[in-house]
Length: 246
Ligand SMILES: [Zn+2]
Image 1: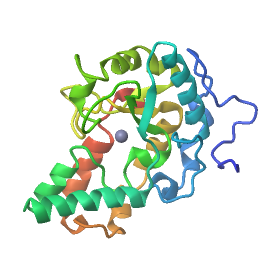
Image 2: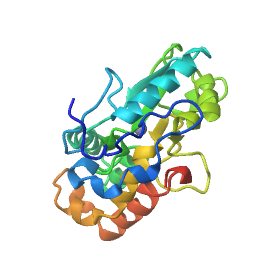
Image 3: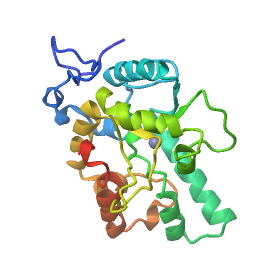
Image 4: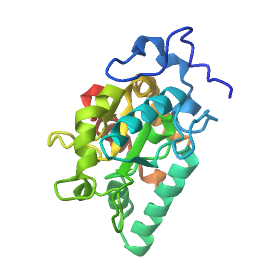
């Protein structure tokens, strides 16, 4: 497969094995990411069936999965790369449901959507670096991505404990932590990010005029976005995350 232009590291290994991350953050320049790439509108090379991550993230994920296997845990990806149009469909589905079926006012509907879902074009899942995971060995009913299932007594308790102890060795970090002072998206014990690429991507993204980028879009509900809303969304939902990822 053709390599993306951002992989310009020459002889440096892009794969982080075990405890020592081998990829220096400075090897990836944030200005190597285009706006279309940051917003999930570019054709990104993704690796691994059912994995769908950029190459270095894919390789680190496989190493982490292997290590977890030997401890009796099957790290299974529920969601990884998602393009702009998929996020737009998720957004519009929720917007219609909350406004048409539940009769909510547009602004209240938008506030409810952004408890867990991102505005299209602003999802970390657009980057090919972020994953939502469960333990494939555990049988469970209903929705899997609910916080209680990762807590004591829940089916994914062991997975969460294992990730707390080990994920950083593979450069995966929890994004939306349970820090009570954190604003923006609610606690997501399932969402991890591959830091060596997502940090420079976030740096690149926040350097853009996100407000102006969103103004070009036409998805449902966007006419209700005010400047104040977008500013607080950037501050809270995009930037108020685990500080390891800033
Ligand atoms: Zn997620």
